[in-house]
Length: 245
Length: 244
Image (tube, rainbow over all chains, first blue to last red; front, top):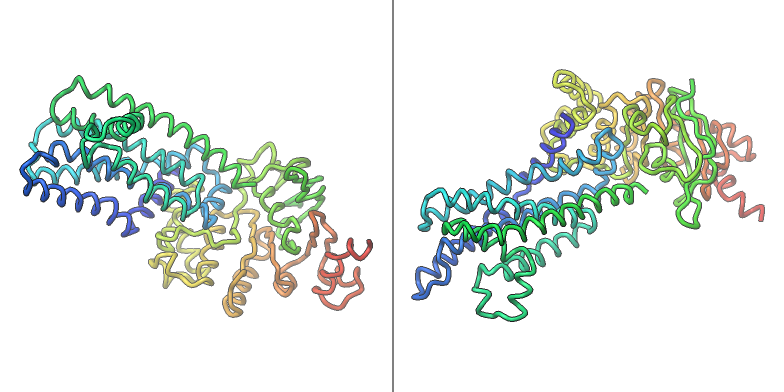
C-alpha cells in the first residue's frame, strides 16, 4: 500500500510533465520519421526500418534516465524526499518506488516506436515481440543510470549529464546513425566496450531471427544493467544517510 | 507526561560540534519554540529528533521510544513540515494529502475522511484540485502543514513554517497553528521573535550548539533583565562573547 502510493505518485509526477512526454516519446518518433524519409530518398540501404527501429528504441530509452534522474533530484532539492525520510517508508520502498513506474513507461515507449515502425514497413511477426523483450535490460540500465545521477547530481547537472551527454553518447556509440565499422579502430572498440551498441545489435538480431547472436550481445547489457543498478542502489542508500546529515 | 526527553544529545561533524550535550524536556501538548541564529544547531537538533540524523552521542526518547534504538516506532508518532514547502509539485492538493495518508497506512475510507478534514481545517477545499505548484507560497505552507498533520502525529515538527511569507499569510498560518495548541506537542523553529512570542508556551535559545536558556517569554526577560524577547535573545545568544 505504502509502496504503491509512492510509486503511483512518481508515475503521476513524470506523466504530468509535458516535456517528459515530448522528449521521451515525441523526439525519438521525429527522428524515426526523419531517417525513414531520408532512406526513402537515397539509393543505398542506410536506415532500413528493421535495422533502424532497435536503435530508435534504445535512443528513446535513454530519456528514461532523465525522467528518473530529474524526479529524484527535484525531490531532493525541494526537501520532499526529506519529508518522506521521516515517514515509515523503508529504503527498499524508495528504490522500488522510483524504479517500478518506469518499467511500464519503457515498455509503452518501445511499443509506440514499434507501432509507428509497422506503418513504415516493419514486418509484423513474433520476432518483434522478442525484440521488445530483448530491449528490457536496456530499460533497466537506463533506469539505473537515472537513479544514480539523481542521487548524486543537482537538477542542472542531471539535465546536462542525462539530457545532453547520455542521449548523445548512447546515440553516437550505438551504431544506429551509421555502421560502426565505417569508422572502426578505437571508436568501434570504445563503442563495443559500452552497452549501447550491444543493446542495438541484440534488438536487431531478435528482429532478424538470428537468435544465436542475441545472447552474446545481451550479456553485455545485462552485465552493465546489474552493475549500474547495484552502484545506484548503494549510492542512493548512502546519499539517504548523507542527505539526512 | 513528558513527550520529548533529550539526554546529552550531541552531534559532531568531523571536528565541529553542531549540537553539544543537549538536555531538554518537553511536556505533552506543549508548543516549544527553538530559537537561534543560523548555525546555532536548531536544524541539526530537529534532524536528530526526527530520525534523519543519528546522534554522535546521547539519546532522546519521544513518548518513550528512543531515536537511536527505535527510529521506526518514533517515525509512526511524528510528522514534519520542513523548511522548504516539500510538496509534490505536479500532484493536486488533494492528491498530496492522500499520498501522505496512504504512506502512513490508512485505509481508503479513513484516507477520504482525513483528507476532507484537512481540506476544511486549512481552508484548502477551493483549491483541492489545483496542482501544488500553482499555489501561492502561503497556500503551499498551509498544505505542507496539513500534510504533516494528516497522519495524526503525536509530535509535530514545524521548521521555519512562515519563512518568506507576507504578513497576512503569516498571520493566517499563526491562526492555524494556534488551533493545534494543546492537542499535540509542537516543536517550532523560527527566526522571528514575534512568532515565538505569539505561539509558544516555552522557548529554548540555542547558540553554537548549546542550549543557553529555556523558559517562558517572561522568564527569559526576567533572567536577562530585559524588556523584550529580542533583547533577551540577543543577550543570551551573545553571552559567551560578552563573557570573554
